Image (cartoon, rainbow, N blue to C red):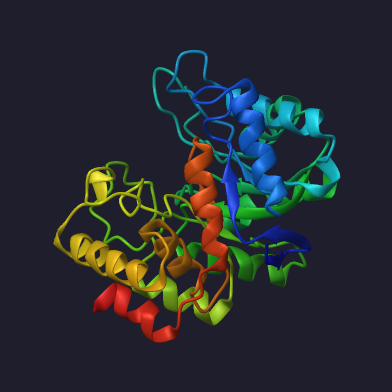
Length: 312
């Protein structure tokens, strides 16, 4: 599997989500997903401090389960852990301070994640949401204090606007600090509908141009629009359903038939064919769906095909 060098880390071109580890998938089924991803050459796993607070006994389950996978496999040194903290409150199940990006909150979230994962350093630590009320200088100083402590290696930004990332990285460069090495927004071939959660950030055409100029990698969540491209029609992923998405879905099926692959693989290959590094996060809990997604690494699209899939 192709790898990207991101902030000194070698990340596989696909990332396996551990969000459902310990809740939606457990035991031997979970270990199989982990092992199959590793056998395919994947080394990058994604989780978060808040996963899965919305489920009974779900708070912290994902990080603890991923830690169990690491201990069972004994391959911690070969695996890149990406986790996230600094998320606003979702009452009553996820109470948080109003200043959820305060240095002491970031530090507490990191400590929780280290203990759950059973590791002494987090490879790639994303701030799960931005807080525009806080100057980027304060945030970057807090994150770099954790880099200096050795508790995180590289910082990233999840659901941040590109202008705030640019401002933060400019401050970091000026003060000889470590800037954000990657962004984790929602992105897929579907045309986005307005999000139910306004703090969730989707890639816009302006964002695409910004990432092309700066070559900042994107770690994309919901890369197949919650299964929208993995079925024969818009039966799942209804949050992404609209006329433009249906047209893109039809073209995806057409190209998949021509190339002898699946629409799901076309959608993932589309992301991986952008003019800057894009690492899709695979959220499936089913081995057959995971195997299908892993097959996207063998699908190579021409620039004209990439453009046609989106605009016809």
